[in-house]
Length: 468
Image 1 (cartoon, rainbow, N blue to C red):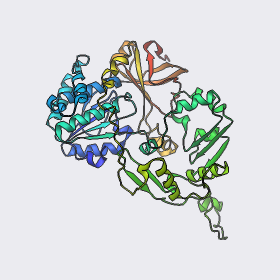
Image 2: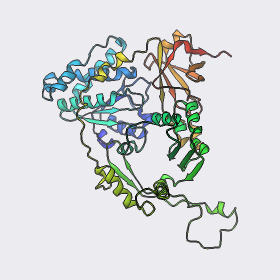
Image 3: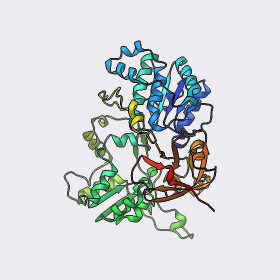
Image 4: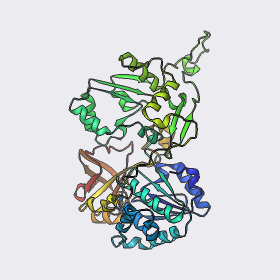
């Protein structure tokens, strides 16, 4: 993995299933720096991507990204180069299809990409993890290894769903939030603790989530935001905000970054005094500074539950010792150090991604992609009235060919029949979008959480125009 600073040095950037402006604006700035130095930027993504510079774009469906990028790499990397990597790499390389007859309108752009990639010296692959197939991150790693063997140098950058997703994954056990919901429904889980987490914001089946939460004997929520989870809590414990707590983040390249507390929280004097004279009594603490960091509350909770360990007396240093015991790579950390993980080579050069498109055919249906926008889809920023003013009106994106089949026009109001009811939204038609795909933002103004399963498919018959 490489850093955003290293991206600025690339002379060819290949974006797979990512929308930098909406998903990672700071990444878009690094890409622009590379572009200003002469880099070519190529994007393989189903959405009508917008960037603050010129770039090449192949709008293909998510299940087509793997072999489209593979075909691009195969057009640049020599077979003799791959033979030196090993038999698994060679078998993978030989299996990459190069037939793009399904997208003849993209042939010229594909060839332009291939020529630029062939001429470059330091290619970088930026891979998304939101709208892509499960196989795409591994496929991107294979592509990067092939390019590195051919060029002598290549980079790989993953866009992850959150500021500390990499760090959290180092302690995560197998399982998912859906497994937790199922356990609640089976009544094998009776109590739930949510720590600065709000499943009501992103879970696609709102009705199922609410029914599951209502079955709990206890829902304890720790948070610094007035979230929907807080409103459902039977016990609520406020925590300190990110700016009031000393923290450490592990970014997508595995680099540890420490962040000291910016300030101590508390009640402003104007509020404390009711607009009058500030209190004349001196006190040792800051009024309103009672909330503590979430980990401190958890430690005391564990102590009260009489679990093994000296939780009540835990300090920050003790916490790092515990983390090192759980994962040895946290044993000797300093600000800016890059964690070195053991490489898992058993899944390298898997052919799953090359056959994914065949397994995921959506004949008679449109694939519904739920996406992020810069404004309106992120929980924290949605609480700001000034950012809400910057939001654009949410709409459903559809390719012109699909809209023509349904006799729909741009800005028509349409109703989508989803698993748990209809969603009404304005239509936005685009030519720069993969056919067979619908793009819908997870926008706070839309009641989109009516999906029982993901990925979602919508039949043409379940889309109709709303007549005035």
